[in-house]
Length: 312
Image 1 (spheres, helix red, strand yellow):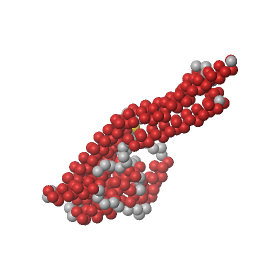
Image 2: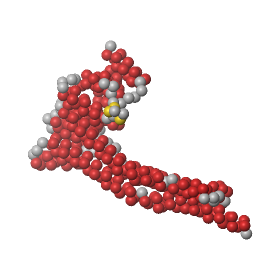
Image 3: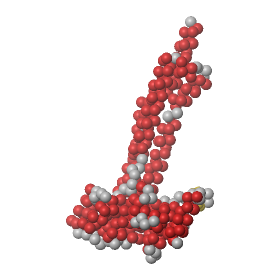
């Protein structure tokens, strides 16, 4: 009976238009951090995990509906979460680790929700910082085409020159190639300046979840490797070494290291965005301005020269 209810709910979700909660007229999309935090609150209230996902599904969360449907068809819960997309693999790993070592699931999910929120805020900060230089670069990319229209508006036969004159055709081909090169170059610079995928410090965060279960370091390593398929990174190993030398619990040191990694990622992103403004001047000077001369100024000169030769 429960399976039929979940299947019916999934079908209704596919048919219904996608809606998000709103405040006034402003849409509020459901984020991964919000879903994870709601899960943590429900679990802390004593609700079993499957029932907690069911409550979120009843609330219209599309990810929860998908997870509940997959679980009803026999898929393990961690695998069902991981199947929701790249943004949910970290939650699946945390869930699997907590279940493996017996760590408090609600506490682990609260910590992960904080990490997801910090990563989202850092990505938003970087995206806002990149908006101005990227927008300026897109605007400047139209300069060569504006030059063609400007020449025609001033009475020069720029279009005819570019289409029929051999030198004009050469200018057209070279200008188009420079415009294409400037677009690719600018896109590459903007992409490299953007936020890196994933959550900074997630390795340390997952290791901290494993140690919260009270297991040994070797047992925690095995649990993290089983959930992620990758060993601990160098920074996590350095924190663990410090913990052994100082004789202090490693979990809090790991969480502090993860928070510091997210802070560094935010600062590095802002620095990359600030440097992008000057770096975008290179494709502007090497490609865009020469294309402006080839498509705007050169056809006007060729048009004047052809007119003078005809008059002579």
